[in-house]
Image 1 (cartoon, rainbow over the protein chains, first blue to last red):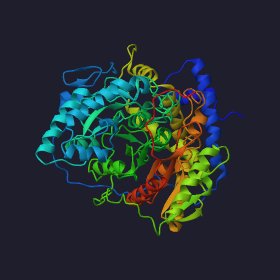
Image 2 (cartoon, each protein chain N blue to C red):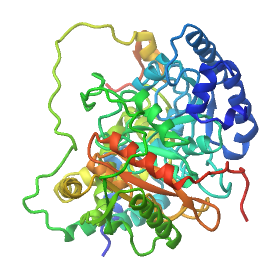
Image 3 (cartoon, helix red, strand yellow):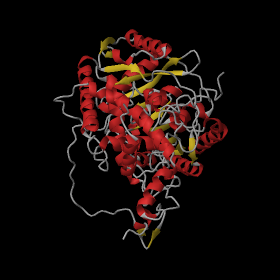
Image 4 (spheres, chains in turn green, yellow):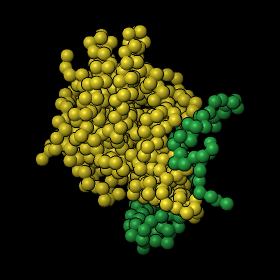
Length: 95
Length: 490
């Protein structure tokens, strides 16, 4: 049985803000299915009681004083924007 | 004196300090070398000739004033995933074509402060996702030992440029093997430092809990010199480790008595090349000849590492790459009628197929109903893999293993089969999951004349032992590697 359907691929693409042609959707469904088959081998491993590791170092929160420091100048922050105007990023109208 | 581009970092340092050559001559020699050979190798996306000459002039002043450090006047290439102020940083993606970072990565500040000379930005798999550099949106890089073969990846440009003598040393990044695997394929040294050793500030993120910047070099000492220059705590990277400064260069002495070298049975698997297995085993025997104790060890969860990695890395990537929305920097699609269409069109046109595949897998693994089954499960497996290494290091000081199951494969050979491509990283991935340091160094050649690498792994923050063992092995192997001819082998 397939592990992932074309409908699920469409849903995930929507979440990821990606769009695909119907041919690409079929290709992705097939490839993701194969990859999910590969990763599903983890199901065979019993991890009951194992605390998941989300990081390798015993990290702790790093605190510092809340001081005002220089930040990136506005014109430099905007210098790579595809479109900017009056010191702001321009996006399509949303309201 | 031999040709400038033939000199190792250590030799070039001496020649510069003795005023046998000056940094501008050195920079020009390398720019000339790039012009001469990179048409065949295609390691560089951007050659920064003007910057190199300017930095070389600065290095010259530093040397005259007696202020030179180990990297002053040394030509270095930078993987195009590391932010360089005012210099295009593309990650080999259409998404970042033309992006000029407004700031330098911490590693670049460190290199610039020491008077290193940047000769250019190096090709890679798009957003560091791949094992062959074929996923570059611009062009594939060719292996200097056989131009029909891949240099490995994702830092293929960084490995190939060092092998082709287009720079003295280079920087790459390693998330699942992206420094060590191309180093093995190209016959150079590559180090994946302990997670947290080198600041990731200004490294374009792929998988934040795995990514680490590291050096490529022609020999172990050159690698230590470069690592020394880029490592250290950085308050701008909250995962940077506050470790005291250490002298890695002086650790490069051939001394190994009393050291126990562990050999994991799980790293010699069915299906791997016999020549790779034999050559690596012979190299391990040389450790014994040099006075080390060899001990068989076990890393029992190794076979689950690849699956855990592809869940964790893609999950983190799907989150990290959500920033490419066509608003703040980089590519924006031309046709759209509202914001949502702009996001979709921009991302669909800007990302290449492997990047989309991984964003899709990562998004799926993190989506409602699947998080526990995939991400949490993979993170539990990661905990077991970390424990495997802890247990192993109770029995040995260093682990020795192959880097890759085969030598460099042909361009196009695995391009249509993602899983076959992923399998080329099975021996490097566990090291990233555990966060321990690993070094890849040449240990011989196969019958086709392609380089074979051996991987040495140490405990967290034990790079000194790594350099000591690697330098010892380099000394006893004494490979006398000739320069690759930049030709196609029949």
